[in-house]
Length: 291
Image 1 (spheres, rainbow, N blue to C red):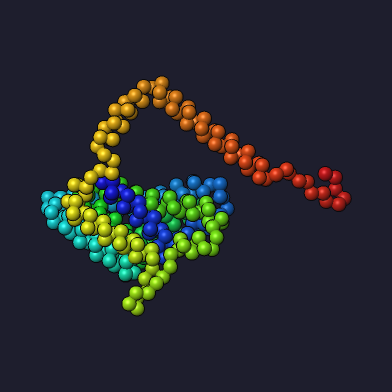
Image 2: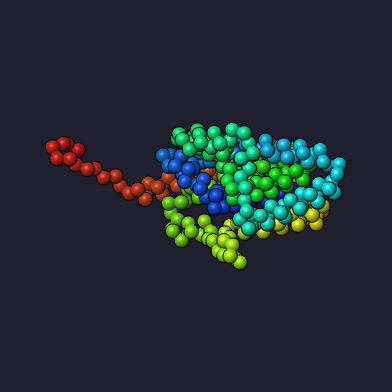
């Protein structure tokens, strides 16, 4: 399951950076430009919009997988084949827009282009999680992986992690966008190249190869069941034994206090640095007026 979560997170990040997903960035920046200090709050609102549309899709995919759980071999084979096909389509730039399948989505997309503030950020999240010709195969792959889980809870979690994969790089880019040079922005957008007369894009090819690899891995590990854990079992057992020492209420209170003090120290250092960079305040005198 760890690989599934990592794949969903990576898929969300690559969907955001895909040629179509990159069009979402100006809209998000426009809705937050008046309140840079509230960037984290806007990111949370944006994520809530993503969750509103993505998690129900994941739960529906998980319910479908639960109905087919009795035919596990067929479910794993079908999931693997669909993942490989979607990966190949995405690598070749043959995308599709899943939002066209949802009734009333066009009206919601039009509303997301109007307004300002938190309302627009929320609508951008609700639209951005599904819309996009380029990101269609990525979302389709994550939904296919959700079907393969055979659990509505795990499937919903998978789509929530996919949304987090879109939010984390988005908030980082929003915070540093003004400091990035033209070369760095060009690298983030990727570049086009031609193979056998067909124009491809570096981001879509990379994402497609990741989806294909996931499909092969899903097939060879019996739906990720036989895949070794990312953390060795002995290490997990040692962590669990050590964590038993932190069960005492005094230890937990001490940890909370220390974390709070570290947070205050970080804020104090940052505030002093900001004041130092701002320099001494200056007074502008206007003729005819007293300071």
